[in-house]
Figure 1 (spheres, rainbow, N blue to C red):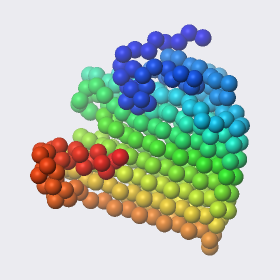
Figure 2 (figure 1 turned 90 degrees about the horizontal axis):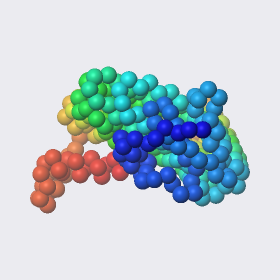
Figure 3 (figure 1 turned 180 degrees about the vertical axis):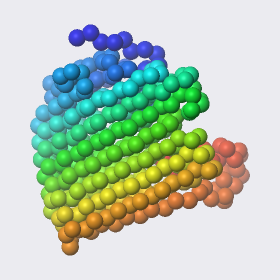
Length: 314
């Protein structure tokens, strides 16, 4: 199979969304560039297999695999690209792996580009995975002139004793995003999702979580931290359904800067008397005394604000 050469814009985006300097030594990877493959490698324990028709990948992790990583970033480097990819992850029994994804979109001038990544996780008994994902946009500073759109969808099925941790971030430069995540958990399974989102200008971001707790002793933690700057708008909606003795926690903390707007709608549905479900939501602005304190240390107001936001999102 011939691969598309990695262009300089892709290299810059990869450095930001997946800390990429070169193809990781000894790791499985697939680099997606403008809907084409720019490099792929499987390992003895992690196979990356293209789906028929080029619509995506099957990533198959052998049972018992420990301490290995898989990189699957996607980049768009020009206008007028509408990218849609389906990636399925099959994590074998007892495996423990790290998956580094992420998407960078670069546009200049008029037009827009979109990346829709649909990921499905099939976690077998007692398997573990850490999933890291960053989204970032670069190029023309005018959001209206060059729209960058990322709409990820994730579906998770966790078998008995499985553990999936997802750490996702939207850094900057994305005009619109709709993030949808759904999951079904069996006995003793655990799902942890940590989400950080930054919106600016007139951009929009919405998050939808839907989690079914179906097995005894399973649990979920949903933690979202967000900053809405300028005239941007964010929406957060989570639904946790307790169908068995289980634990569920949803937390949304947001900071508004300028004319930003945030809607937080956590929802709990207890269908079992031993389902312990909690939700928290807090929306506010940066306290003036925080700005003043940092200014006494020599920072300008703008620098102080940036430092507070960075600390909050990290």
